[in-house]
Image (cartoon, rainbow, N blue to C red; front, top):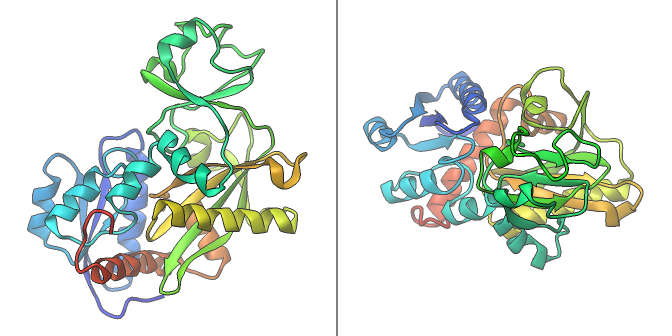
Length: 325
C-alpha cells in the first residue's frame, strides 16, 4: 500500500541492547524505503537524550525500529505515550508482556495456545542440578533474537551439572527460563495489521546449516536456509497461521508481529508449540517479515508504509495514545 500523504517520520534505531547492530540495519532499511516514497525522514540513534531529539524533530509519527530493551519492553512506548507522539508497533502493555517469556505464557496458554512447559530458575541453581530432564533449553526471560539461548544435552560440553566456567547465559543473567527441548522443525509466521484486522502471511521453515537457529544463524548471511513457504502438510500450515493471528490478538499486538514455533512432526498437530511472539520483528535484508511479505506480493516499502498507516489508524481511533493503544 501507499500512504495518502507525505509525512515526516522519525526512524528510531540503534540503542544499547545486544541487538543494536540488527536495529541499525532495520532502521536503515526502513528509512531508505520511506525516503524512496517521498517522505521526510529523521534518523535517530537511540541514546539517553532520545526524548529531546524526538521533541526537536517534531515528527508526524515515529517508526520504532529498535530491538530489545528499552525499545521493545514498554519503556520507549511509555515515553512516546507521555509525549503524545504516534508510533509504530505495539503499545506499552503489550510490549511489557510480550518481551517477558513467562508473562507471555500466562497470557497465551489460558487462551488455548500451546506452549512448552518449564519454569524460571536461578542461574546459581544450575551448578547444583538440572532443573529439568535433559535435553532442555535455557533462555533469558527478557531477550529476543535467540540472544543467550543454550540447549543442554546429555552429551554436551557444559558438564553435568553445568560447570561454573562453562560459557553460557547463566554467566550473564541471574535468572533463566528452563523449557523442555522440543525436537523437530523451526517455523515462523508473520502477521500484519490492516484496515480489516490482522492477517497471517505464510509459514517459513528455518534450517540452520549447523547448530541451531541462534543469533548468529539469524543475522549472518548464508548460515540459515529459509524455506518460504515451508513444505508442510496443509493442516499444519493452517494451524500456524491461525495460532499466529490468535497470539497477535491475545497479546494486543499492533502493526506487525512474528510468532515462532517448534513442530515435532512425529506428533502431527499435537507436536506444534508456540515459542514466543515478537512485537518488533527485524526489518533487515535477512529478516523474515519482509521475506514473507515479498512472497505475498508486498514490496518492502509497501510493508513499511502499511506499518506506519496502522500506527496512525490506532492513534486516531483512540484520540491519541494511551499506553494500551
